[in-house]
Image (cartoon, rainbow, N blue to C red; front, side):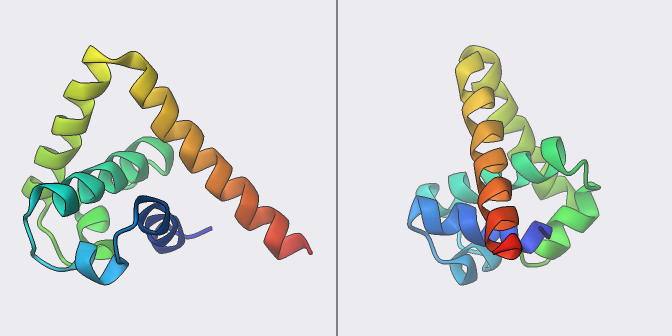
Length: 102
C-alpha cells in the first residue's frame, strides 16, 4: 500500500475528497483530516515531512510538522485516540492486502 492509497482511504472514511485534502483549503474539517493523514503517514510509514507534504498536495514541511504536532497533542490528552488512528491505518492496510490477494 502506498502513502497515497492510505490517504485516499482515510479521506473516504472521513467523508472528505482527496482532491480537497490536496488543496490549500484551511477550514477546520478539512484541515483536521489532513492532519490525521499526516500523523498516520509519519507514525506508521515513518515518512519524512517533505515527502508527506508532497503526497498530500505540496504542503511544506513546516505545515506538516504543525499538523502532526496538533494531532500528537490530542493523542497525549487522549491516549486511545493514537491507538484508534493507528488501528484504523492497520485495518486499511489489511483490507488492501486482502483485495490484492483475491
